[in-house]
Length: 292
Image (tube, rainbow, N blue to C red):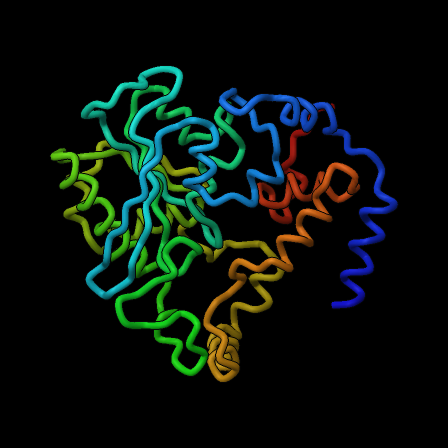
């Protein structure tokens, strides 16, 4: 850990200017209420409802409880700010995030570029889900996520998210609006859980107008990611070791990781291009089509 901290300090101290400095400056100079962020770091450290409010968009927080007791939080942008900005019985769009993420996926890059804001401006009622166990859905009616002696809260996978969480959220939205159908957008694991819902709860196909899968993950038999291939055969062993150590949560929110991320991905760090590329490309950098 000490070595990691030393390397981060060296990175920040010796790192040259980023090739994306002009883009960052455009964000920094923009006003709140505009189309761009004026403080990227502040945005990243703000929760989703606060971030949406900061840009003068309407926001609502809704909670639902699944049949097996998980308390899920959804974030809603009921209408636009600049266009289609009057309340009304608009068609709902449900946005589901990817693995290890949250509803922030759809708002973090500001009103000009984030899908949630763009859909609201186009006249949709935007709902963003949060899967069980993430930062916004880390509650249960009787299980404690912080109890290291009882890891039952964490005994779930994308199967439960798809077969239980998604139907619960969809039913809540449609019942509240008095509608019969909605649009569904899923990024990465968000697409996976939609496919799970279609397989295990096929009746919900009648409640979907359209499905948009953004890099949806399904079968992993042809996965070429070396790290995944290396650890996959030892899944059960790793799960047993983690349980014995009282570890149920994987890569939860941490102030330490937040600070390291800010340092490594700052405009003064030569690692910033990696911060931009890794979440999208993984280890497939050969697929990057970059222009200077």
